[in-house]
Length: 146
Image: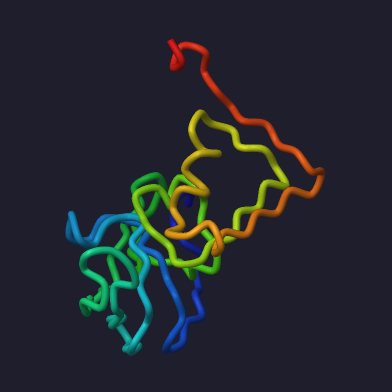
């Protein structure tokens, strides 16, 4: 089903994860990064990794999903998280990172992305940019400059 995580996820203590849906806004929203501290059958215990609520302990339950686009009914339960080795520029918006790498192998596709990516890092010394061809396109809407 589109928008849902894979049928199986392999987690262990210490791994970074990202929420895929709002659990308890505004603290536990889609895009929040967390560090797993304990795994149980139906609950993930984790600490918020960044922001004002950093180090706050969070309990993430399995959520029942009942699709209605099948001729029969069934229910499955899922943790609405994904492993977070990397994230999109859009998910990074509004967050601050100590260190970040930006891969510009494919040019940005939306206005403002080239600004957002490097502006998320607190120090330019900790920003690593990969531009394989030596240049990239900055998407700018002329209307925004007027």
